[in-house]
Length: 275
Image (cartoon, rainbow, N blue to C red; front, side, top):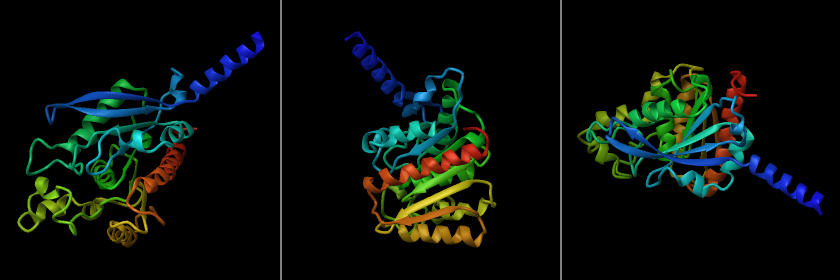
């Protein structure tokens, strides 16, 4: 009987050792003068006190929040464990699109997500503080945000991705509160041009970032993703581009994020920051 109990206790211990854990934290933003909520997912191997980890920043979409990825993607924690990385999910507000608004100075989500939050994470978690060990991706608005921030901060991020990303929001001038933070498209076209990913891709040189972009065949952002893909081809920028059956929903993203994390794992491994 004692042997059976001992085996049970050992089995339970192994189960919990293999489980990723989730921290929900507040990070103060000096730029916006408020606390920003953030989820940090730590792999089971984080329990090894001597080990440092690469980080993937994972952004939510319009009308979402910091908790979406953990709540809506049941396989995410296992994927974090399997790939042995930290995953950080910051709150990007209801419709920030992850830029610093030229219209509303209280919305500084480029500053917050690209600078303030990573600085806090590097100071409080055992990260590898190097661009070769940092990646960023997201869905929809977050897909735009991930590419936007990575291109504008190539010295900080080494890899970036987008899932169903709004990589050119100019065809949608009345949608998703964008004009609230950039001004009306007709009178503030310059703001829209400067903050749209497909335009700032002109700042990108080949192999400055490892890139993975995907979109569902039934997604309303499919055409802008195809346009973005073609622009990268025209500029001779190496990247992975994937179209697969799916729509703009969590069924698609639950599947997509696994491939993106694997892509980043391989990027980290290639750069010698992960086994």
